[in-house]
Length: 208
Length: 123
Image 1 (cartoon, rainbow over the protein chains, first blue to last red):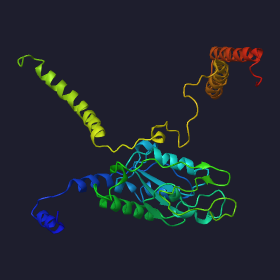
Image 2 (image 1 turned 30 degrees about the vertical axis):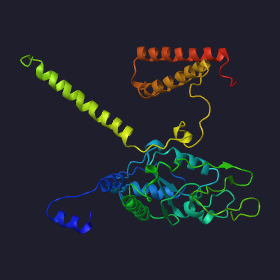
Image 3 (image 1 turned 60 degrees about the vertical axis):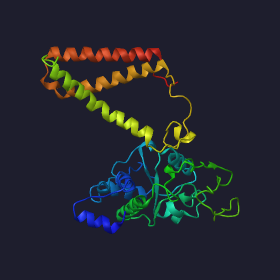
Image 4 (image 1 turned 45 degrees about the vertical axis):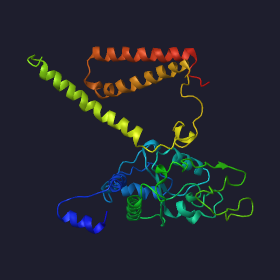
């Protein structure tokens, strides 16, 4: 449908929409985040849900304490290598369609703890991240901005064709391998499906 | 049939039933027809805060724990009644004091029984 024609029809009091727009409108306004916090960023995430910042304006105030009912995983803080398998498992247990916001420097790269032997250098090594928010910690406004970015992303997703979301693609796999603690690092060190760069593992240094 | 005095009630009953069942049916239909399932072993596993669940939920507890429950009751009930007793002590009659003492003695008897049974020693 032509955008210009749609606006003209709207002026005449006729609302025209497509199934895709209606579907995405419903999806983007009812995102339920999963209720879990990993580190200090979680405090900002909690503040975002409270009255001053009021995440309820975006239809996302229902934090679900079970992955079965959640759409959105907010990785709020440092992911240690001990915690990473649990995070990936929870992501696997969430129902499709599911989204991930990596909140803060730690979640996207390891942040100030990057040199730590026990810190995962970014959760996007194992699960696909939709929106990254820099900051240490990001302010609630930043989380809301990320949330709006996610809504825009959902809104723009076509239901058919190449760019369709994973849950409408019968070929796409819904399971992401859960890493297990190895001798020096998590094994595998990354999911090559979402993190295409080879990661050096072993005893060479803390740069992995 | 329509002349029956209960006809309107029956209509309302069926309407109420439909009002309750229709959303359930629609939800079931929606889940069957349109939901995008991508099942896998991890997703279908028991949810345990992200950890792998261990063992069975149908575990048995030792029945011997009833002793600890009884000891707890003795001290708990005693504390609940001793505080109002102490607060109202100066205004109580002799009979009330005697009743309270009997009550406390009964509880102490329970404690003595537990002591004699040897369950106060941590095993």
